Image (cartoon, rainbow, N blue to C red; front, side, top):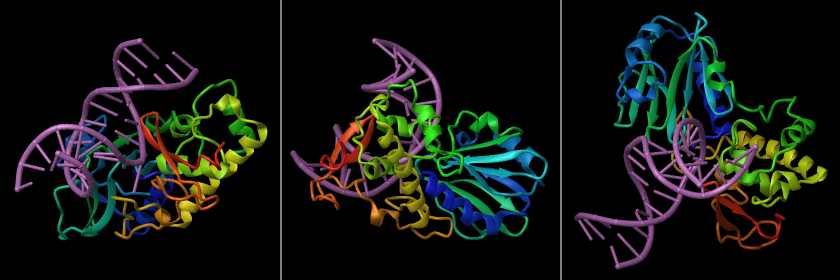
Length: 270
DNA sequence: ACCACAACCTGGCCGC
DNA sequence: TGCGGCCAGGTTGTGG
């Protein structure tokens, strides 16, 4: 569920309570959370290591440790992270717990169990295939144009493809296409230069607004401090099927593309 | 190269 | 109250 803005909020929310803390123990009640290593191996390799920083790449959270390894967490559809006192109550969806040496714990709550945790020497083994960061300075119109060049793909699934651009998910892909005034079923080879410029600006605008609003809390997403974001209050099309477009009043439509719900204004998006 | 679909999970909601 | 079906912010693998 969390997309780039939500994951960015999680990273920011965790920094104050995690940076410099040492991991003393790992408990895991859903071993499939661990990707590529056993719980025992995770425990052995992470014991006594301290967290040096918290970064984000696409929708992945990166926790570089003091020995060069990096702990990586992906929240997938329903993951939440929080740092709380070790004696505070857990519930049945708290599947993985990293104990810290200050009496607190980093807890991975994950109702649908799709989330994943890695521990790697080289982060590229996990995030190496991701496309560019859409909010980075160097993500330019020219770069977008170059990545579109020679391809013929339906735009909505293309925006969801993390190897094309990293970080957009179902909410921000729909919102960006609305801001750009482009229909989600259009294919990448039909975009004019002006439309590519609009799409580029729209992707950045949608993600920046998401961050500015603290992320979208539609169902399960909560920031690490347990509070909701506010992006859901300003969504233009996402899950507004049948409601009036704020720009022209036409009812928002819903279709399925690439197996995902897709929302758009049939009048504003051509 | 691209698309459609299933799978991985749990739980809420809706209609019967 | 129960049950089936559909829905959910993500990713990966398969087969066409």
